Structures are given as structure tokens and as C-alpha cells.
Length: 367
Ligand SMILES: Cc1ncc(COP(=O)(O)O)c(C=O)c1O
Image: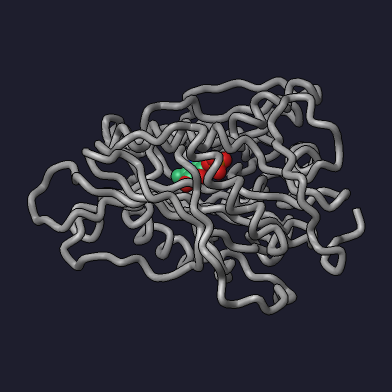
């Protein structure tokens, strides 16, 4: 990337974070932004005050929905420095999403450099409470004004940051998920493996319905046979067999390949839990839950890391998982992964990137 221009801020008041800290509703003062067109490629990279986008009402993002995004986090370490977790994996997924949505590629190092430079400048916003982190949201969107339906010729790439408390205010509490019967999230050949806003817009009717029925998340089935388990809400999902083996749906082309999922698949065997990727028939899994063979279910994603599932609603019946509480495998996965993310233990996988900044002491939690 060409050098990032740093623009001055007008607001220099001390950073103050509310307590409790909500998830994803507060933003830091600065943002990164650059633009793309076919002649200049990516250009005008700058970090400056966070401000509204200068967007023509005819911009393609607002009509054709040509956009992609990512989600990753910065974590306060016990020594006050800051960890990024696998931002290169997000960069690779960003580019896979870009390719699927006919958008320009962004070099992995530019994606990571934009995040690093912004988080360095905004490090005072990295929160330190249990389960808190600085949520990082890179976005690419088509800005060219036209009603023609074709790949745009102008794009913006920007990054905004949000100091965030735990995703679920209730903490590490089991949630209920309801199998979606009417709606599907994604079909093979569609955009399910890309992180593009339309996938999320299309999921809202089902998640609102699940919520009205008393469940926190939707359990998505495959689009063709409506039989094989894909994801849970905007998270990947895993089933623990006999208290030990972690089984997760194999990537099908319509599942978003989660970085948390990938990390668990690599971490769990080292902790003594074998893993398996498989095609999981919902009826068989529910029967295994009822028979006590599936002892735990949990969701995996950057926002909440690990979310235990206490019950699954399927065709009008509620199936309790184990005793309905968070189980030992989900707890072990949460603890082991967050220990690496927050730098509480050494990282044998080379996943973390340490930024040599100091989070303000007034905010530092007891490790
Ligand atoms: C649809 C969907 N599935 C799974 C995930 C989990 O992915 P990750 O672990 O990379 O956050 C996400 C979140 O990014 C998602 O939006």
C-alpha cells in the first residue's frame, strides 16, 4: 500500500467507555478509508475523523447490494499491549468474498496494514473487561452511481472500530436455537460462503421469527434437501459426541468458513478432543441429543467466540441438550481460545500479532 495519510482529529477529550459496555453500538473517533477505480487502483489511503460516507443516492451498493465486510477483534493483553487475532485469515476471506461479488482484490498486507495503523492510533479504545474487545469492521462497497446491473467501477474500502462488551449480555449462558423450517440462509453456488450484507438481510425474517418463538438463534439447514445442518445464526456450530468428539458440518459451499471454527478444529485435538467434519442430518442429530449421545452443542464466531446451546427447537418440540447448561467442552474451548486471543498464554500457533502500544492503565483489568 502507498503510505497512509494521517489527518488531524479535532476532538482530543479523554476516551471514556460506558460501563457496562454494549456490543457494537459505540464507535471510535477515527476511521481508515481508501478508494478504488480502474485507472488508479486503490488510492488515497487515509486515517481521519470518522464521518458519514459521501455516497451518491444512485450508488450501486444501495441498489445492487455489491458489498462485503469482515469482523475481527483487538484484545487487551495482561501486559497492556494489544493482540490482533489472525487478521491475515480475514484478509484472505475478504478477497474470496470480493471475488464472489465481482469486486477488486485488496492485497493481504494492505488489509492488515489498514487495521494495524488504525488500531495503533485508537489503542486507548481497547477495553479490558472480561469478554470485552475492540471490534474491527473492514468494509468494501460499490460507490459508482448507476442503475446498470454490472460490477461497479468505483469502490470504497474503509475500517471502523467499536469497543465492545460481551456479545451476550448474559455472559457464558446457553442459548436456545430453532431449526428454520421455512427459510434457508444460502444455497450452493450462491453467496453463503461470502461475507456479503445480503446474506444477513435475508436471514432477518427467520431470526425475528425464532426470537418471537423464544429462541435466540436460527439453526439453518441446507437449501436443497432441508435436512443437513449448516450454521447457527451468524455462527458456525458444533456437536459434542459422548463428551469428547467435536463434530461440525463440513464446509459445503454455502457455509461461511469461520476463523473461530478453523481455530477450534486446530486447537481441540491438542487439548485431547478429536474433531470431525461431516454432513449432519438434523433428524439424526436431534435423536442423538435425545438419546444423550450428543452431550453438548455450541456455536463459534468472532463476536461471541463460543456460545453454548442449551436447547434446540425442531418441528414444534424442544430438545434439551445435556442438562441444558454450558458443558465442559464448550467451556474448555472458550477458555483455551480466549487465553490465546487475550495473550494470557503463549500462542503456539502463530495466530496473534502483538501491537506494541499500551492500553491506558485506568482501564486495565486484573489478568
Ligand atoms: C454467517 C456466519 N457464519 C459464521 C461466522 C463465524 O465466522 P468467524 O469465526 O470468522 O467470525 C460468521 C461471522 O463472521 C458469520 O457471519
